[in-house]
Image (cartoon, rainbow, N blue to C red; front, top):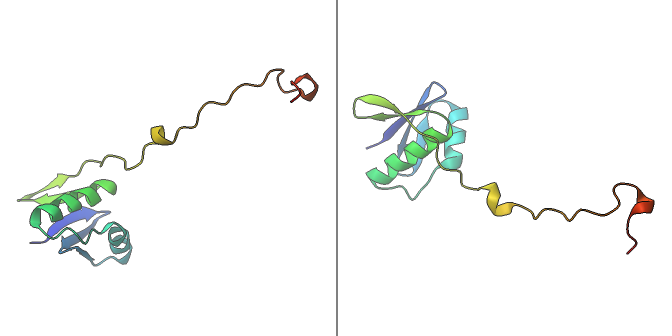
Length: 100
């Protein structure tokens, strides 16, 4: 059974790893996130909630629209933080810097 989401005023359905939508722009955005492994109804619903959350949309659940929450970020900057640079003595003047 397809899962229906609404983003940017357009409705789209996700079924058997593919998105179907009348708007080409919305379809292109959703196709970029499409997960072909989502074949079971639970996996389809989970993927639909993920996509709707990424674009600030809602999902049709039962007999009402349910707002999707933002998903957890896939990358966090903490993992890529550079060590703080060692301050040079002497400041910005070239003649006051230590010779190497």
